[in-house]
Image 1 (spheres, chains in turn yellow, red):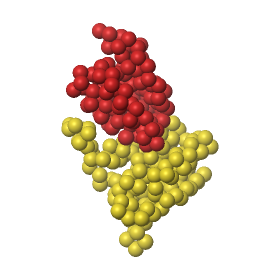
Image 2: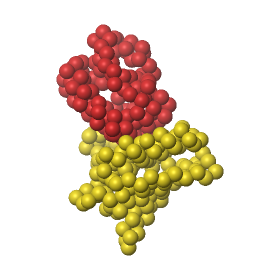
Image 3: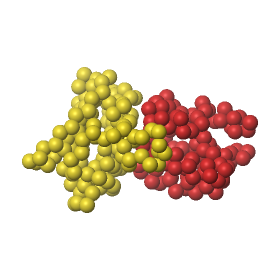
Image 4: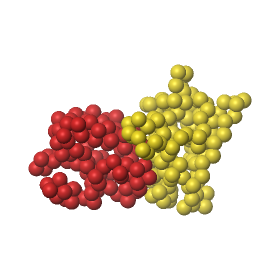
Length: 137
Length: 110
């Protein structure tokens, strides 16, 4: 099973992305944990790409693919915004006031906590970023 | 989102999905209600099946706003997956969290 959606990175598209998640939830047999991660990834990563990836430039695409292989969920998110490897994002400062935490940091932290594997690569020639998130059954 | 006052406690029943779109729709009303109440508030999350990081941020902002006014914001009814998110993000250390609404109201009454 593989499903894919490609939308411009604008706030108006968030509803379409969430409908894409609803559709996958309805039509696949992912576990509750996998569905939660899928929704979290699409929500947090798409909003980060819209807010920061294409900040101060014309919004480009967000291209999301979701695949199931032997019960494993594989999410691939591609964009052509500012390169950013979420694995490098610092963990939130849990000792300090949560309001002072880096924006976006908490969402990425939760994704790292829930996912089994996270991969990232940036192609400088094509300018595509590709983030892959995997969660087993 | 449903708001109800039970005794002196403002009970806020949060919707099933606390994602960016829903938060944008309820954030102002929630904050206005909590500030206007200036007292004991309880977020009933028994119907909530998804929280994005923005939702955690919204909750903590309301707690921090209402505390200096002499109020409090407590939480009840976390489903297992949501409780896990609270634990992982350490938000379980920032709020008083109760199993269900009845227990939370009893504790507020003490």
